[in-house]
Image (cartoon, rainbow, N blue to C red; front, side, top):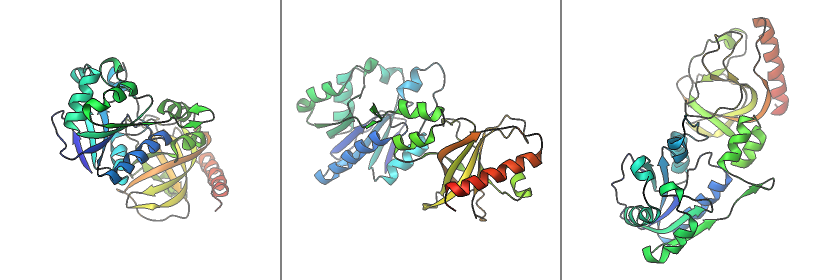
Length: 309
């Protein structure tokens, strides 16, 4: 996959099919869109995913907006999906003020060489987000492309959207979030050294510091599984604590600490993803290390039952 970033001056020589979107969360609606995009390869079109960096929501917000899917995670998703080009188009005042038809003419038609455009019904582009799917269709013949509009995907009678996913993750509803995403919500990063308290009490854990840009669910304990980047097809049953470990630390650094069942490999320095399946309990402060150990043993035992181990 070729990544084009940090520039508005590029041209793709091949005829392309282009998917436009934020792709935050990469939920089932996004997956449906990507499936339709990849179908266009059978028509001889190179596949292109077009997204803005930063997202318009982040650009216009008065405070940082946490991502459901970080830029690095998106790259991994599109790479694995076999996408030919990923366009991370810079979003700043000049590009934000582009008239919708100028975006169609200058970006879609000229720079992307689009012969097919795939988008959701809620697509917006151009100044004030005034461009929509109707304008795309209206200008299709003039600029020589076809338009495929993806119908909404529903869950519990509500449209699946990044907003819906975000709401459920903030509430710790990981089962529902997983249904919306089509896969459990995950947090990735490099395995780092912790205080190694778990090792001293017979319950060794692997630790990672979540990316600053990543939306993290409420602090607490979750049933989970782990995949390592160098062995993505294998899932390791686990139980995970997200939080600041108030019993043993000063409560300033947010970490993701995971106990993997029947696991004794050295994985320091490896990259892994922790998939959160279900919320168990909120993070707690214990009066002693012995109380903490007793609760960890109870949580680990309940996790064995959850995972049928």
